[in-house]
Length: 388
Image (cartoon, rainbow, N blue to C red; front, top):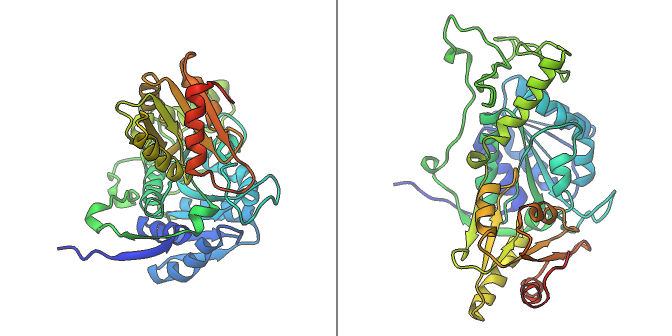
């Protein structure tokens, strides 16, 4: 019988411990509010597991370091907040282009610029999607409880390994600093994707780092410890060997493959939760900590005999578009609360049929959206209609 352990952790602590459980053995970062407890925990705990913690001179160097560590064969992670995440965007694009598995944690705070360092925000949702330049696909997760932080950061590492891509793990100041009690899952309940090692390659097999697999499939995960199997890495457009090749055909094939390996696997990648959506006439779409308030608002609405349900995307990018479309086709109204000015909501509008009533609830002053505010929005959309 497994001995279960009960923990009382901050969200930031759960992110660090979950990363270590996932096999992360290298962390590079620069302290920044409200993510600093992740670095603090990693500095203390990672060496106990044979890992390495480095405080770099800035966020640019931190992002470059985790890419290098991953290419050398080690699962790696960094954590930051808005200003630091902005500095990491070039390296994020490099990791996408070179298909380097690693995890970027962004504990969001109010912005732009220095903004509100100690207040929660969801202002980096669109930055997570399009922050780095060029056409690219991205995977980004955003949990809503401390237990989910632990669970889904492990999943973030798995996705990163399976699809050979950086994964963004979004949190916010409230989620990062709140403490909650939960039961750690047993080892049997946790799936951890491991790297393919040199010994897993057939003797006669030639290692091709960027080989295609039926064009749209992700390249098989075969990042080997540097020094055993050598390969060329470049942020330039490159062929399957990794060497630069600027021809139209090579560029077209590469960029489409990099985007399609996420785009064509949306159903396998995306995660979501839902609550009382079966008979819902009004659908609340909320993510992160706002989903906590939204669930409470739905409970109150149900007590008042309103047929309201909650759809909570956990995978923010790519949007769980197929499942969301099914729910949206059956409802009369949609309420979208966000701690920004409608960044995710405007993407949801593209999926909504013209006759559906829509209500945006947006706050950017550093305060949480309350259940009462969402309940007011539910009542308003039923009586007044569109507001965005």
